[in-house]
Length: 276
Ligand code: PYL
Image (cartoon, rainbow, N blue to C red):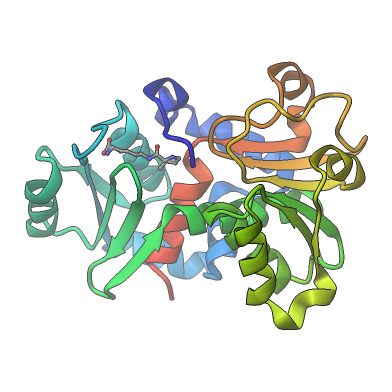
């Protein structure tokens, strides 16, 4: 996933209510419902956990360092979903220690390569890439009124894309995918020997875009989906940045697009971390 900038997430926390209302209009699901669906969790259990479990977000300075608003945006989402959350004043190892000492049950932290949630009691590590892939497919199910037996194109077979493919196959969708790295493509086919009838490799991006109504954009390309190369009834799940649609197309077509820089991924990480 491409590294976020503060510009991508500034104001996210204050706009969560509006964001959630927009998500509900598009998918018929709230952020909470999407996260629990993706995590295979009952909402009752999630709400019960929110009453007793505490979350700490630990800023991490290694590598390219802290991203402004990153920790507070995570806190905004977990607070919004009902979990008491604090951002540790200290960073890195000291921050982790303070988080645990101050009673956190779940820690969120990210360096330049990994963004994880840790359930300390259950010794569980949830990766943002996996959670994002599942969360956006769960939201796409709402947008598409179900995906069973429907053909879905997944662009990019990295962490997010491969988890999206896995979840799509598990809910009975027919998956086509493409990736610029033939090794990733080969590895994916070998991972699902019993699903070959529901799994197809595409090799030409522009041709594929025209042929599929449902698209999961899990690749780092910017603005490659335009008015001209999309299926006329396309519905797109576009996690993270950069956005695969051109700004012009997104402005007129966003009612058919699920896109955010962090929200669905963080909400699904939380649901997967409290797991039943
Ligand atoms: C988690 C995001 C999703 C897409 N790209 C990932 C990213 O930007 N990773 C870097 C996160 C660095 C956070 C920094 C901090 O503020 O604690 N270490």
